[in-house]
Length: 292
Ligand code: MF3
Ligand code: CO
Ligand code: CO
Image 1 (cartoon, rainbow, N blue to C red):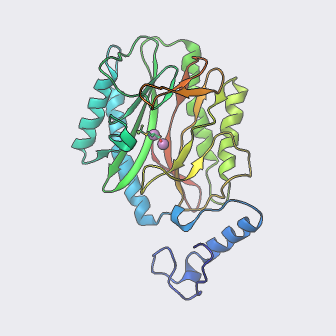
Image 2: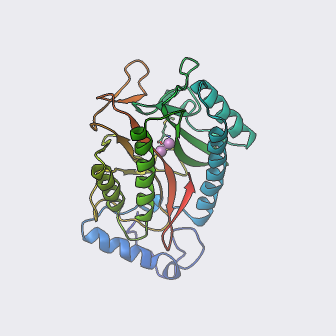
Image 3: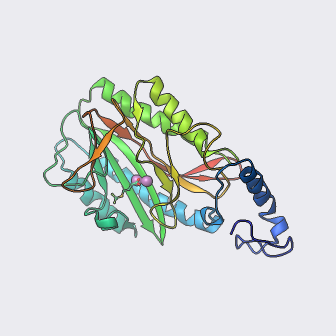
């Protein structure tokens, strides 16, 4: 697809209606050169049009508003089912759809992951937020057919200083990853800064689960690892949209999946884990965070 012969005066493959030479010709030349240097390069499918990015931005606004509502209401003694209720009601009110519900048999509208739960915690009337808990709320909204995916951490009551620090440090890692997100850089640049900061603070980054392209579907290519090295992995090009969502453990990196529900991921050593997630677009000049 990427290297199909296309005349310089033909309409561009991106659908802009412009001539190829005035649109993505130079872009394709940069991609071709990176490919010759041995890099993984984005396919045309990974490059969103400005209209699609507008759609994802709108989905992101709804997703942000839902997370804001959770932030305003989350409190000690609340069940994770009550968080699910806030998410599903607010999303519906704003005209969106909760992507997790029934996604590959996921039974709820949002993921709520507490303490040693790394991700994919399932809301329940049985799970009460307790003093000292750290909880991740991961929302994905479909709005007018576009997807935005983001998560935040919440500290319940009196959280141990070291756990609060983990939460803050992982947010800092995502911020460092955002700064590395720029056209003609590499996906591995993001992984490196995140992993470096985790290691410098004595944490470990989960290897098996990563971020993903997002926007037209829930999970698209590329897969986004946070244990990659600078200058490796995919070339970043304007129009790519993906998540940065490192899962960082206080202890060892190993994780396992709950056998009963086939979803919830826990740290093997029982140490606490934190995660923040953004949906980000690579732009001509840098990046734009579309959901957080
Ligand atoms: N929101 C998660 C992610 O960041 C995916 C959750 S899948 C679900 O990729 F089914 F559990 F919702
Ligand atoms: Co995600
Ligand atoms: Co998510």
